[in-house]
Length: 420
Image (cartoon, rainbow, N blue to C red; front, top):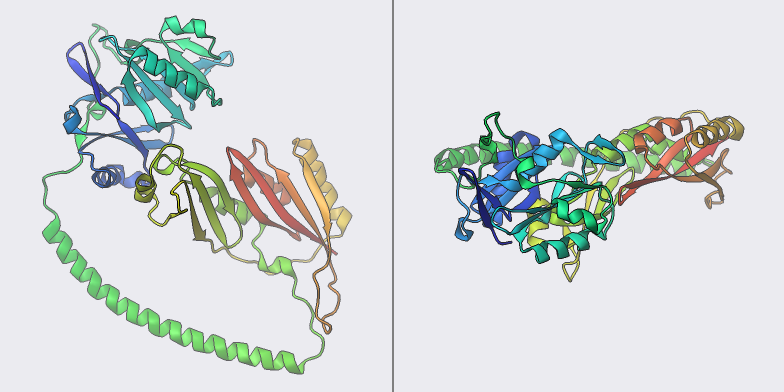
């Protein structure tokens, strides 16, 4: 993406940075420098708005210099502080487009989704280039507001607000720009040499890790032998016993509230490396992510998600992460009326469609008695509610969630209800 530099008063501003999301809140600068080194950029700037952290990268070979101010970072911070007018009120804005005339006659374009700059959402070009991009992105829908020079009002953009570049830049009472150091580009590489200390630390860690690994292997071997002996003893007892009782299936699953909280806490990588998250699925034993490229590159996703698995064409990617949650002992069941009617009533009260269907009992061995419970599947879309809120209504005896999914901002929940 080409760097474009403009001068306003005594300061120089830069457009055309490449923005990437950051995921380590306590070490944003380090993460940004590591990512900059991987994508071979030598300058970066940090922005943190509305619980979002991103780094914008540029190249000195393209004309960018240390200390130049990022116009995109300034505009996003101003919007985060001031908000914008849309739907009849001034409020926080997370999804916005901006097309602004620059003092040199060129135009700047910015596009942010969920308060994050898109990877190619910061550039400068001719008016025709910017308008072509603006119309293309606007057609995707879902934008809170469109910001731009007053001459764009005639295009009929929904929730359009007329703004100039200068209106986003803070000024003092005397008219001078109130500059902030964090606006400026910083070098990705620092001059301090940490290699001797790092080498010594690695030697110590290797020695400690080797001893710890040996102890862990011995402990795992002992546990495995004990588990095999226990399994053999249990099998011997079962073979001698009479008809066995089928174990309650709800006892082996986490409670709804516990699973929902874990699933929401682990939702991430919404725009990792500029890739679009198509689906996020969470079950009692794993979470999985599925992305599509969305104009980015394989290397950018790999830099942010090293364990991602790509398809042969490099257009799709996925990641599966194990999930370990506590399983409670099986509780006593309620009858169908006592369990279902309060849940259905609560869902109707908040306007959520709740679908229930009877499940056939699982096929049992000849010596296994018929289970003393009935099972019903359920599913719902949580609309604007978080899964944790819906799970609070479902957290009753015999109710278990099997699957929580997130697609394009919408949550869905599936599970089973057991009744006596």
